[in-house]
Image 1 (cartoon, helix red, strand yellow):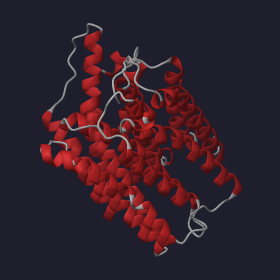
Image 2 (cartoon, one colour):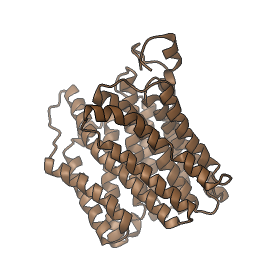
Image 3 (cartoon, helix red, strand yellow):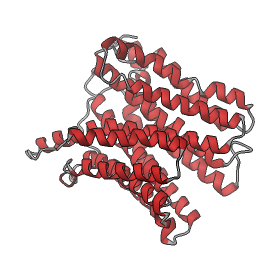
Image 4 (tube, helix red, strand yellow):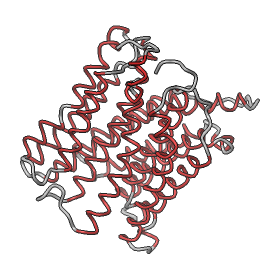
Length: 397
């Protein structure tokens, strides 16, 4: 569907560009899923009937919340990278319905046959790849390898569904763990571009010319370490090799972040949230190394440092920034959104370090979950109207 200022286009506003339906879906699904998860824990429900409820929780956070955010980002970025026409209209509606069908299938997983759930939930990533691949391949764009990330996530979901079909809980957990690693690699690559770039732009607007440093050897090291983590976590996730790779990755991330002038961004929430998210990637990998290598109790929640801190906060940072830019608004968030950032960071701190601080495991889960829900509720209240209304500058999209 080509862009125009016609009445028909205005009726399609929620599907006028790739970021609109999927950013909104991610922002709404994140608190909804955690609300359900808290209810599952309190009531002892079994969303997947014969399987640990943690599998449902992990799957829906990765292949529901995170997948929607990745789709929104790539459907918006690929037209910019390739000069192709933006995605809008009927193809976007169909893709959104496929994502929603997968979520509904898992919502009723206790009553549906596993082959049906598998068939429905595995449709989304191939459809997304089918939309993104042609312009990337035609343009021979340098970002074309990101299609492999989508293939890897789809493969992770296939393995997860296969594991459920054969009642293999350990294989299902491995599939989720490796899928998280794939998302972390994506954050490492994309974050390594956007965090220093956006920081440098923000500092220059304030008249600060301090360089945001990038070292080629460090870029290669940090990406290689995160890629190796995927392989290690697939075959030997709890040994010395996994701890060693995590330690190398943590050091490389820390050195990378040290060159990005983080302390100079504190006056701009839309910039510092990117640094906080990336800092959680550093902390999470360090905690993983400590836990796997030394088994220190306070490092046990390293996975939540990576998922709540690095992944969720980076998604929120990118969603809130990209939405403003692509709807013609100034790149500055409201105090309500900045408060959401703080609540999300606090929820992560509590979830990661609360259990080891003798606060009680269930109490910390409930409090962190409540803060998470509050953070996203604030952001949705501000961004839902933006995502559902036309651009303020009158341009299409």
